[in-house]
Length: 149
Image (cartoon, rainbow, N blue to C red; front, side, top):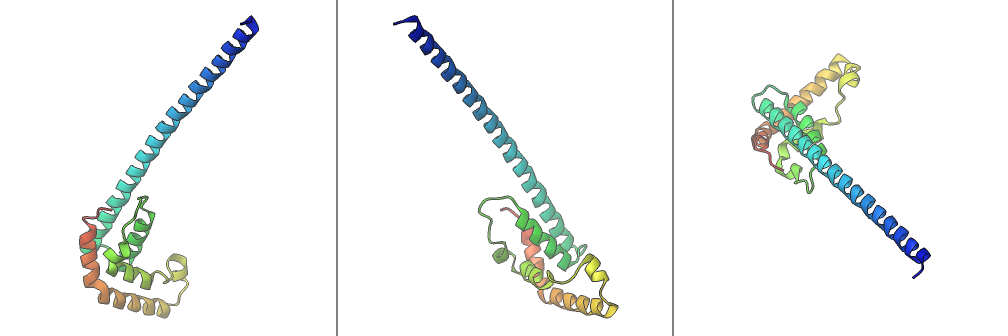
């Protein structure tokens, strides 16, 4: 074998070894990034579950309006970054029924723009819906305090 052939083989082996090292380094970095993302996701789920528990407790103790609580819980459920989300609407029918009935009502600035009579009518309607669903909602929040996805 000529010295040129040996040189080419050595160069080729060096290139392959360098590429293998680089690929290994990239795999290591990807694994590290995936672990960090999993940890971040886990922490987010834990924070959201803590919020769900806190709001459920506040609703149960009548420290939080049922409508406001149902809206907040709905959005917390929707933002849970978990695979195979359970059927929250089936598990918590009172909360989801209340959310469906009050989610279209204006809030914040839009509510401020309503006349006093319109606000009173909406408040009366919301309170009637809350009264109608209260017993089911309280059952739902009791289950939520022990929430496990």
